[in-house]
Length: 202
Image 1 (cartoon, rainbow, N blue to C red):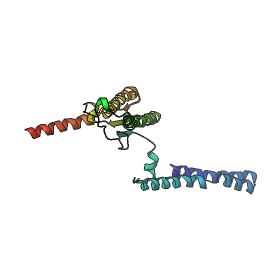
Image 2: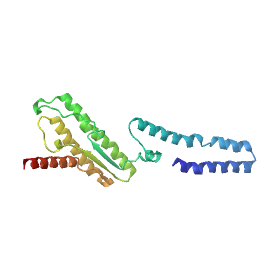
Image 3: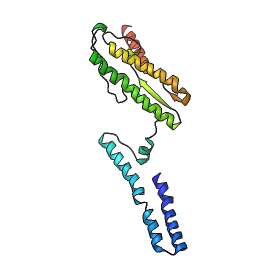
Image 4: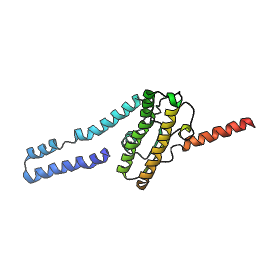
């Protein structure tokens, strides 16, 4: 984009400066116009920022093929979130419902449920602003539809992920934003595990 801008901006300023000199015969005015409109910092700043961004991403283990891909990264068209969107989550709690640890409950909800909700909040806003729709896939857990013993906090969080996913789908479908059921992948994995277990029995 900056190359296209520079392609027209620089010749345009040259023509304008020559025109000012031709009309006024004041070389200082023409030179002043050239200095004031000098595109140097403007033309150089964007490529330098792109190179710096690619270098910063590489240090974090993310390889970006070129500047055009970095510039297009400002758009969000499809997003798949696993728990908090960066594969970070707390391990399930391990206590009966009458004995769960309140502090661990708060930590688990903050990461596993609130993290997903906050990610969705910002991605939905970006997709609405873009006006071209998109897709968000939240990956829940088997615990999101099938209770597991001694994991009340984890089960509640995964049910919550499914609930906020369905709610977002209902609210943002009119913006052509698809938010599939959060437990769909978990359900497929669960069905596969059941079939595998049945095959062992046979």
